[in-house]
Amino acid sequence: MTPDPGLAGWLQLTLTPGLGAAALRGLLKQFGLPEKILASSRAQLSAHIPSPALEALDSPSVGEAVTRTLAWAGGAGHNVVTMVDDAYPKALLEIPDPPAVLYAVGRVDLLQRTGFAIVGSRNASAQGEQNAETFAKALSDAGLVIISGLAVGIDAAAHRGGLAGAASTIAVLGTGVDIVYPRRNAQLAASIAERGLLLSEFPLGSAPLAAHFPRRNRLISGLGSGCLVVEAALASGSLITARTAADQGRDVFAIPGSIHSPLSKGCHALIKAGAKLVESADDVLNELGGFRPSGYASTTADRTRAGDSEVGLLAHMGHDPVDVDSLCLRAGLSADQVSSELLRLELDGRVAALPGGLYQRLDKG
Image 1 (cartoon, rainbow, N blue to C red):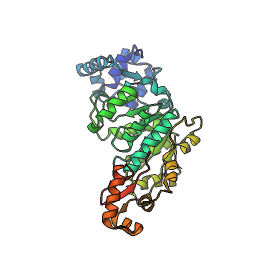
Image 2 (cartoon, helix red, strand yellow):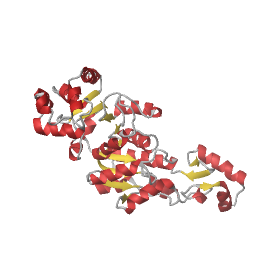
Image 3 (cartoon, helix red, strand yellow):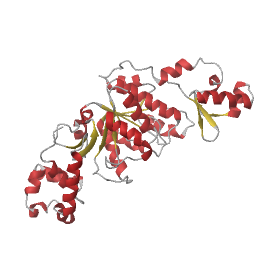
Image 4 (cartoon, helix red, strand yellow):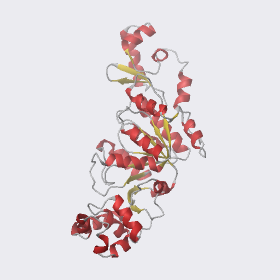
């Protein structure tokens, strides 16, 4: 991508401490592009910029930050995309507070494709992660770029599914794009940088501050044509992303779950509030229109229905978490027999062990 010749001006404004997004939008509206803003007298600017920010605007520290960022942007696969660049995602121009610049590592062409957000709990169940990955791959194969936030749990599973599909994935970060958070997702982040896109509105070196993540979430929802919540507790940040998506005019989808699971409460609340209940990727594609499956494997729900006729311990498990004693009663087996069969099923990837001595059936992909 050819850099914007006025990139230094954009960086000088956005890297000035105390010059917030609202003030910058006011300056752009009043004066035009950054070069015109910076060419204006400081007396003219004083009516629009707080005094501390005006003093910092021409400071050596801001100049050094601009120089460092321009040097970074010269690296392979590194880009700083301003809101007047052709590469800037049109979808973000529709939201109330689009960032003036985006820092990107990887395939910036993905910003021009139709995206779809998948979010959910960091403390996801094994089944939730499998659902997220399966849905993401199916939707990616149908042409939707999967967007999520690189958190552990559902986000990471969604990115894996997006990478496995045809359209790839975008990870929107709550840090500088040069920082991987959490560190346990470093290998996944490297794969996304190579085959997808890492994206952030925060300057290089920005730490994972708590206030960054709600702002990050509005970009996850804003980049997508819809947002799917896979698992979420009632206090989950994923519900904030879903509500932001609705406010932005995006479709909101949720996967239902067990009435006994805290991770289903958030999804059920969204469905009660009007989110679309989905059981397969086809349900999402039919709602969005214009996207059709392209040879992806049968969905989780299809495999679940196909497995309902299975005999043995699985036939007695259902799809809610269950303890060994309950399985002994249902199957008429001893505790040793049930434990032995559970171990075999766990090694085969058909059952997951949960905290508290519970087990849950998995839909094997």
